[in-house]
Image 1 (tube, helix red, strand yellow):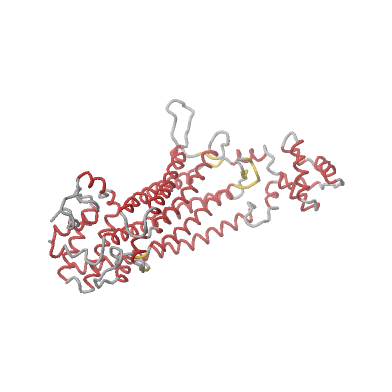
Image 2: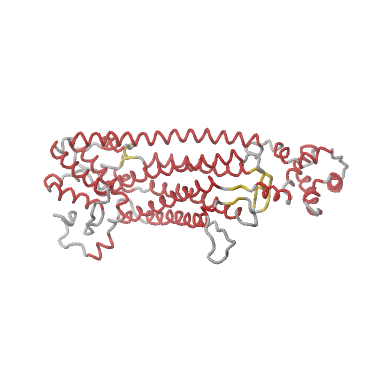
Length: 494
């Protein structure tokens, strides 16, 4: 019975070259355990519905648990005569306990809803894993943020020094993006965590199955009602890849920052030696290869989304073999992200911040120009456009950044532009020369003043705690379903 258990309709065996072309057997090892779990749950439901008897469910579950243990212990020998993991596992059961009982395990389901169950279970597991790692990265970044609340740095637009800021403010920008990714993961998780099992091939089944029961045993929070939607729609895959792509783009931009800041031209940060390599011929070189590879690996993740979109968009409603190609796109998006997050956790745990270099960059630039313009507006009621013109003139005619804070030159520029004499108080300029006071004047919500940075850190912590609670509930529900399922299997086997 062993080979081609699905090919009753066709008399000629599958050509070996065609089999090789069609096969996803080795790739399917990624979802092998999920396939076994889905099969166990389906058959428990068949037993509870009176379709299998006690002896049959006992033998089926015994066989499936043996296959599962062999797989987990890397002792399962694949038979490459099978197209994919689903008929292979079914055939393993049939060879183990015979066709009379083993031949019943596929009753009331199709490979179409079966593979959808497998992928949804795998995505659920991977989303929980990536959430856990992102929370760890969040904690590392937040710890660094707390350490550098008062460490000045230039903030850039167009890669030009724009405004005065602090390093904590920049790190908080990363943390805020990670929080949004965690929010997206929560939303994607909820839409993914639904049960397609029981939709069968595309139009349901006449077998008296209980879809709500399989959803309960698998820890799914709902049943996908429409049978076409259950096996045909792949938006949950695209959503997952979109979420991972957005995260990748954020990580790539962080890598760009680290590459620029760690160069000798900037020297704002230094990566720990453990995350750098050396040149084969230049003894002085210390290369930030980890962040360079993060940048390239994220490009592949983004391209996986595009590839999946092209596969899905060309298929009519229904199930098609094209979807087989989606599994590895999902796997090859999750796996590199796990290693990338791991790298960032290490990099930001050990990174050295060169605050003196950042301060020198501030002092050597016209970074306080906007602060001066706004001070003229606030203190002297000068229209901002005129104030902008006054400071632009000061910058244009200055020999160094300190010139724009020269009291007499400011008064002269005001007189020329505004056509009126305004006396600048002595403490006017001093308030800008004191960088702490300069930032204190930034009263807008979300600015890099110490008050606002501390408020934002508190807000980040509160939002993280809320998301972490929902994550723990997700994990608890999955573990609860797993525990109930495993206890039920032990009971039925014994």
